Image (tube, rainbow, N blue to C red; front, side, top):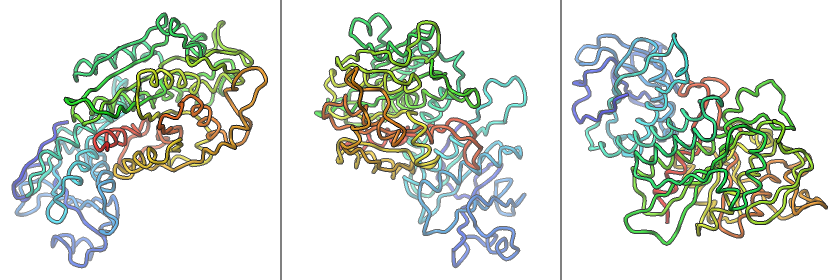
Length: 478
């Protein structure tokens, strides 16, 4: 989709449809047409309403659309992102190929412009790439119109949304087309295109280093594992060194502790955390924050072949800590601890990981919030501030030392699962044991990485959650 900015009167914009924001609590309608719509009952400005006026007199656009924006007091960039996404998804099914959005005063702001473009680009994305026929039609052009110079904000929004769609496209790929080495190859290609340093640790190198926890998970698959490492260094290297870590299980059967067949096809999205890290790095390379950022994505396939881990097996992690594997479906934490230890050896000063780690977080928070855990409140405050700015819902979960009592075994340093209770918390506490005091935040995205049903503003399937938060965190690092 082509994205453009124009600073001309909105009446002169040539497009198949021109969007004008319609607030439901406005005392005086911004446009006479809105008043007529409200009086007729056709639209009262409720969120996602989209009545159309064809061939409007005095406008170059073929249609006017009163984009319902809800109450003005609740209007934010996050709301506008959804409005434009919903408008794109609705209008492109009606044969509309070009859409313009007017951001006039008092809404001619950079944050709103960027969010509007993000919503349009995200809303245009479809998951039907592998269909041979019956594909949805893409929007060809989105134009943002404003009297203010919002061109830089428009470019910024396009960069972020394109990165998020890169993530969504990776998550959308089935396991047979995106095994670990293919994910590594696509990461390397993206890195080369954006000037990032890329290193891929293969199975032999990981064995030399002693990554027995990660390699234990990989044993059950014919597909070799990899560890993807991307590096961004600003023009003036920073004292702080931020590390983004993402779980990259390209398909998860559960291993010997096999999952139920119902819904297992969605386990291609078990690499959504890794994909989010890769998408964020694409944008970071282009936007050039002032902090050094390293990304680490341990990637494996969790299968149940003849060499697979068994319940009761003991593996030795890169740090030297031993782990009794009580459940082979708790594999994400096994690969993440070797990535966390490797990050510490690189000298990173701060870490954030994203992982579709536990079903327990879905029980706790549903599909609404990401669960956020930390060993450092200042670090968590940074992450949550970026999440709020970007409209990504995150909730601070507890990580008290008392939860360690659930992680006991007489046979190794730690078991890879606790008991029945507090599963998301004990999983996070398990990871914490490898952080060594480095400020760290763990984001459990198991309930938010995948949409079970299409939203007005987003297609069913991968959401790209955390990409915007990671980018904002790096761009506003202090």
